[in-house]
Image (tube, rainbow, N blue to C red; front, side, top):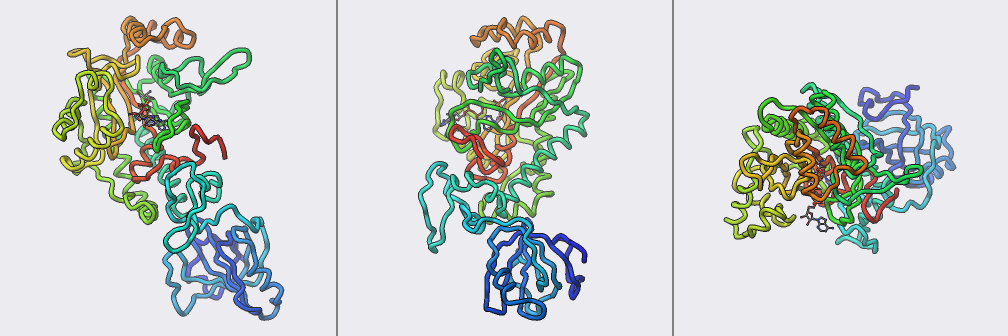
Length: 477
Ligand code: ATP
Ligand code: AMO
């Protein structure tokens, strides 16, 4: 008797005996002579029936109908095609008439939450764990309960689809980079200095001294350029000790980073990055349409992400964004413009304005003020208040930062000092030596994978995009 996956089963198996290994989605005893199981394999469900007839005992019916929900069982039985088609779209129009049941892995009788209850979107308050019910009296599973019991939560149809979307974004990023001749790099995450120059680093005890968890692969991807690697990319964890309890900040997230040399102008790299994002977002819509449709049932915005119609990213300058906000009545003072850049509220409002005016949820702002960018950013040679740096936005929120980098050692040291950093500090020495030894002009960017998934799907919380999210309150599971 063959053991088959649900996806391999069809009406062609009618009246044939098969074996399946699946999860018990639901079990019920109908009568002393009849019991039903709903079996589940990822998104697919098949009903199984057990009826009293030779050699099946009433005891076996009681046992089957009483199986603990979520257990993994091995079932052997005859495939039947029901005369009356099964109405639910998620349930296949096949039935298994059970001959044998073996327990493979038994789930506890009381689970901390029911997978079916977790199918509805939770309220987004992260730490509220009070019991709630919806209008029909069904329990609402809070985000905290779901994240505390993430393994069960990952089994829901929506979580399954979201994890496919993350997988797709990483796959498409790597595909595009490799096609462009980029080399996949693997840089250390245990490092000796705070890469982004800030204070938001996790310290680790490194034998007899201190080390840090990498805030980004920034210094190493640039050192690879100095090592004549020309075009590199990485997919790796990024650690930020930011005590930011927001809908879009994690303390550990997946970074999609790239760095490239250019011949004449940093816009060669900016053009490349724009095409990369248009490729990822348009291919996601095509290749992952089935998953998007599932997510849309819980999060209605999942299917409505607007890409520019001409297939080219919309690029504006930072000051164009300032002007659009001013037209809408949001005026930034001279100091705000050059020292603060946009607040989250302003960014979101700008996203609205751009959607209405240009009909796109994806756009790029170039030429950010120098004062708000990290030390390695190259200033605009025409106006030193600005820089050759860009942010990418989806639905009005930042998903990527990038810039042309300083490749001249004197300029780099001066920039560090102007940002209050000490070039002689341990950890910066090796980075700076790379420039003392000669480094070609280059630019790059860092994408937050979780942010791309979140804003592509219009999800209300970034934690839904992380397998096992880390935030200031959460270090488990
Ligand atoms: P980047 O690191 O490139 O700046 P980001 O989007 O994470 O990316 P942050 O500087 O961390 O940017 O924050 C951006 C916005 O988020 C800021 O306008 C800030 O006001 C807001 N923000 C950050 N932390 C918090 C917080 N704990 N509560 C409310 N808002 C926050
Ligand atoms: P930046 O600090 O802007 O730039 O980070 C790059 C991108 O990472 C994402 N991101 C986050 N995602 C989730 N939780 C967080 N706490 C978080 N912080 C940032 C955002 C952001 O755009 N070295 C530069 C990149 C470069 O210039 O190449 C850097 O790290 O999507």
